[in-house]
Length: 364
Image (cartoon, rainbow, N blue to C red):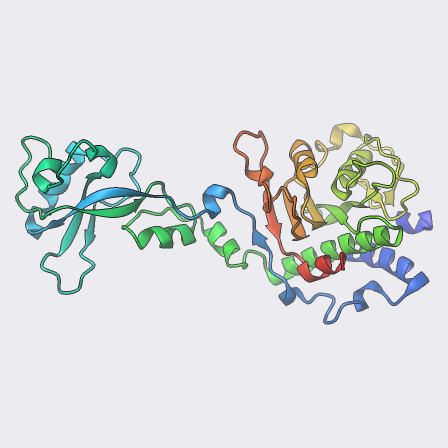
């Protein structure tokens, strides 16, 4: 590819992308934007969903507890006070002690949690008298029965709704997560920008495919300036570890005066200086003004990264990752969730589904 093409002044990422696409496509076929049906910015055709941690995405864990009817509603305050003293339900502060009777027209209005089943394993014949500690009268309580209660606080609205089917539960909602789970976190203008970035990754993947390489492309973006920092694709013909994500990280390092990969034979793999509007492979930069590799940057990649690439993203301090399609050995949602491992010293947000159909079609 003509090196001068990549050194032209760029006033926006769409200009950078379209210039590259037009140059490539003029040799072989119609412009890239016309290859897929529908609008080039048909953002309604895909939804970006968050890839949450197991704690946030798994079904809520339940545990057994004894509950009993409150026969006299006027005794509720006393019963709750005495039960809180006898059985404080340590670690289960999210559970409400009392709930309304679920049976319409029942003979009693309320039900109260007495204790966890694990607190009464020594009792052979269960009765309300046996469950209560010495000195606490059973007046106002009916015979106990077993219920299931959430063993930990719900972290998302789906978990809260699931937990509430069993027993009333407190929930401190993260509204941002709730909106993200509905696929509504990003505005139409934001989705249009995301669409353009992923299209750049798709174009890079197609360039790799033409060279007989794996059709995986990636783009690193500085979201604060809305500028592409690096565009890369699979380069494993050169080295078995040169996955698209690894290539992009190295290109970012090269933009900061570092990096070690030799990618001259891959013209689609280029970087932009974080402080200048030029795409090139040799730039002099002020190292003191640069962030640590990918700190605060976004990655757009056509396919879910593997464990090696996911760990490289952790170490390079990526800010967010967006991928189009899943992978059987994917480490950001499918097989592992490296980005949410508690014992790692860096975590980042992950979203799946950006241009999912186009990314899937790369492997057809």
